[in-house]
Amino acid sequence: MKTDLKNLSYDELKSFMKDIGESAYRADQIFSWLTKGVTSIDEMRNLSQSLKQKLAEIAYVSSVQIEEKFVSKIDGTVKYLMKLGDGEYVECVIMFYKHGISMCISSQIGCNMGCKFCASTIGGKIRDLTSAEMLGQVMTAQNDLGERISHIVIMGMGEPLENYDAVVKFLRNVNDERGLNIGLRHITVSTCGMVPNMLKLAHENMQITLTVSLHAPNNEIRSKIMPINRKYPIEEVLRAIDQYIEISTRRVSIEYAMIAGVNDSLECARELASHFRGKLIHVNLIPVNPISEDGFQRSSDDNLQNFEEELKKSKINVTIRRKMGSDINASCGQLRKNRRESEILGRR
Image (cartoon, rainbow, N blue to C red; front, side):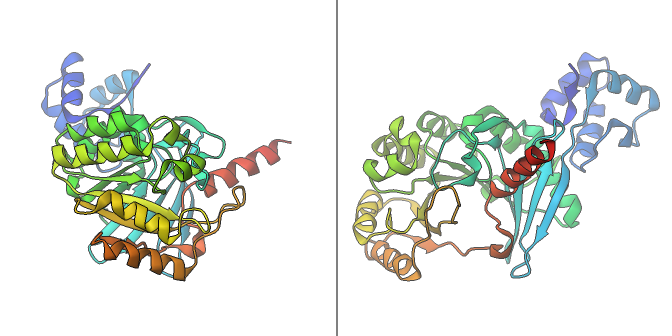
């Protein structure tokens, strides 16, 4: 099998070039081209034709293509449906802030976690993405926009910590100063509570922000909407959060999707507050996006504000996330689902 050059770290690329009898400086040339978003070896103009031919026999450069693009007329948010080399699709979103351009990328095709309020999990997981495919999302969007992406959120389709090795390699590659050089403090990694890998990540010595999708204050509610809670109950997740903070000294963000009549009562707010008083955390309250298959509805504005105020009474850092790209359905999962359904209908 040929080697995907974009899937190699800088050190791996140096070893690869050495193994085929080439000088180490060639790795610098190739790594530079890869981070500019080239999609073929032939585009690397400062390589000799003989080296290009040699590489083409044993290696290739994966590409990620824009299949659909939607731009919000409300706030400029951009949503992409991107096509991978094997014909599968992923979704990613660009959001514009005063502090820079943030991109939410996917780490898997589909998702195995089964969260009841998420469209990404409908149909389960097809496969993990490679680090190259994650990097490809960033480069493809950056080239399309003509602007530098400064912040990354790995919170699109999939459970990032189930694809642990590829995600960590992506983090190191995208942070490499010879490449895109995006600071780790500008990168957020999300998990729905994969306890062992949360603790493993804490020891990676990377100054990222960990975000934990909690979405409920107790096991009874969480198990109904998040099947992973049956494997890693909320008590284990909370202990892992404490350990992550202690080891990394980094603040942890808590994602809490506000679902009408399910987890948005004042009793839920008080119970949630009891878990986090005095701790280095920040709670993001997220008005849930309605999905036709689940029947869940977003909390009312009054419930959102009352929930926020209840947390503030306990000195919990909390914000209600501003919904961006509402006119283009900017939450992940729906575009891929719709495209797959259209393809199936087209084959009948």
